[in-house]
Length: 127
Ligand SMILES: [Zn+2]
Image 1 (cartoon, protein in one colour):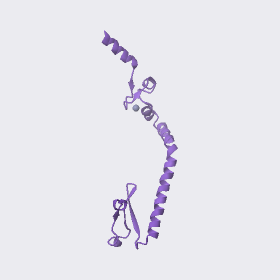
Image 2 (cartoon, rainbow, N blue to C red):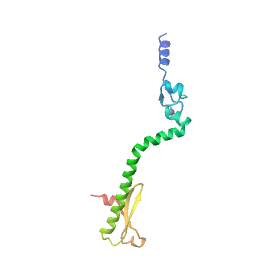
Image 3 (cartoon, rainbow, N blue to C red):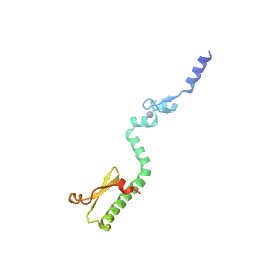
Image 4 (cartoon, helix red, strand yellow):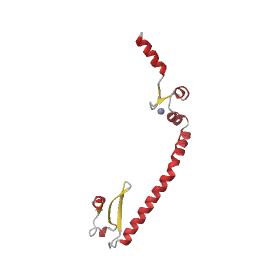
């Protein structure tokens, strides 16, 4: 008897989960959004609208992000040019970029690489 009562109370709490991604949802979504969370529902029924919403959210930070990145790249290029012009190394430097960072500096020209070997970032970062 007590067990039956407990089960009946549990079903009254009515916990719903998005049928697509299993995220917890409320009764509104269960009955009016085809049993899906907002993201899944709008993604299926109004994909363009959903994308527009995402773009609007991203745009708030994107301009700042884009400016930061542009400034970083411009400053990096400026410093690379300065190093080439001012260090009097007798060669033109090549900065080897990989995955968004410089992993080494070497000679731009293949013929000069024997007298100026590739120097890795780890060697330059040694203290
Ligand atoms: Zn979902």
